[in-house]
Amino acid sequence: MKIKMQRFITLLAFEIKKIFARKKAFLFLLGLNVVPILGGILALIIFAKYKTWGLDSVRFSILGEALKGLFTAHLKLFAWISPFFLALIIGDSFCGEFYKGHMKTLLLTPVTRLQIIVAKSMAVMFYLLLAIVIGGLFLQVTLGIAKNISESPQIIMDYSESSTQSLIGPIAALKLLLISFVANLPIIGFFVLFALFSESPILMAFSGLLVLMFLQTYTLMAPTLAKFDQFYGQIAEWVFTRHSSKLFEINTLNKIMDGTLKLIDGVITQAIFGSLGWAIFFFVIAAFVFRRRAILG
Image (cartoon, rainbow, N blue to C red; front, side, top):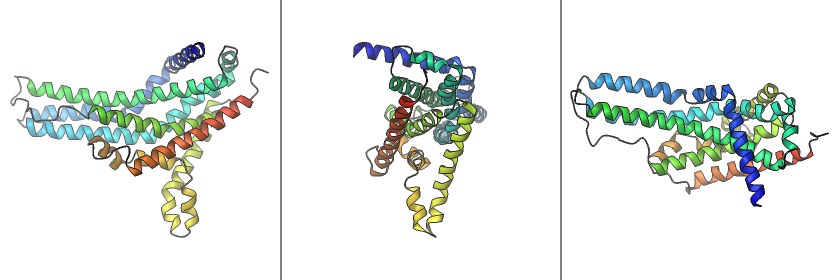
């Protein structure tokens, strides 16, 4: 058991290195953090400008709220655009390796096919969560820079101790990371399953995104369609993307950040278990398909 675990950890580290070895991985990180980077810089410039006009204590508290709003927008936009990046990364990780023959070489090492799927999926999830953390840290650094500007003796007014000093608390941050993990897990499983039926990363990404966008569009239209026939609403209950959308609602994110919503609350619990259920379904089917696929022959 210990040897198997060591092999898996080595495989996981190898998969993470492969993701970051691709030049576009850093470009993707930049794209996933466009809101906190551009918004944070703009907010800092505006704050510094107003600070020279002697509006420190009021403007700093407003800046704190603005940065929290930017972080919420970052998470919401992240939920919209992350599937596009996930499709490309997973396409490279699976389809690209099928096409280049790297998967055959990997299977000749002492690892199981299940370990390969789990390691590759965990590497992608690590990359995704890292992108979220980078966005939050950037906004926190922005807030810290504004605090230092306020305390500078060269500025008209001193920093007010009652002003905001932290973007979000550590407990809220962990809750948001957990929600991000759960919400993206079924989407990763969905793309992994798609990737096992193709050797073209671009074709896999295109077809997978097409199906995903169709499902998401149907979920948005379902309430209106249900007014004509309840059957359409019943179908929408089986669309897995609705659980992820529920977890990334702006109202949900704001309540988690200010501590008024707990993960054990009914609405959140239902969405979490729904996402986990679909994730298990996709990964079980993917493991079965991968086990049956002829690669070494």
